[in-house]
Image (cartoon, rainbow, N blue to C red; front, side, top):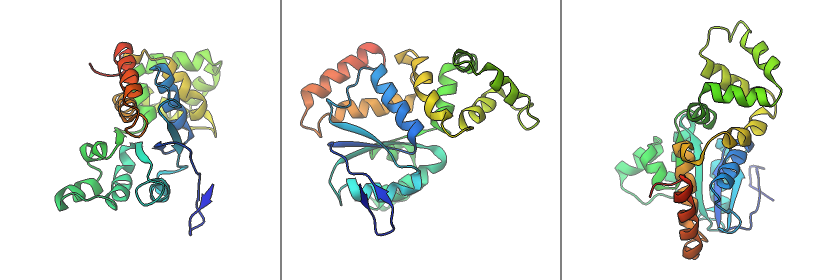
Length: 233
């Protein structure tokens, strides 16, 4: 663990590939998705790292990126924070003025070019749409929290909202609920129905391999992902 001059703690990592995500629930989801698709992060010399907030991305890029340990960087972000990520990535961008401007604005195509996949709202929203509201409610009921879920639905602020929005609120309430539910929601999905940002991120991880030196391992992982439906042929 090192600290920046601003006093921000940035963990050291012993991996060639660093996957940056906003929080612990995102980390849990990415790791669960990798397990579902049989993408061995350890074999691929990859680690998923929570930034504890996207506003800290500059500190992580300086620590692990080209100006620091020179690790390969991939990541996942929400659409609302795409410009925060884009501005941080643009600090090390050698592209044209137009592309730099688009990157700073959070253009999803340029974010993907720089290794970051963007969720349309957030990862919870992506998972709810992939599973369906009935499927997410089934997961809630399987955990024994049916009464608490129905109680929240009856709150005045929630009563008239769409079920998908109620579910986003449910997952976001409580200190650890998103973290607990992330692997449960991933497990409720067949591999071929993983949300596109997660599928694309896993493809990038498998393709990257061991910092470009593990092509045989990367190809094997990609083959397993295609077989399981996590990656297009």
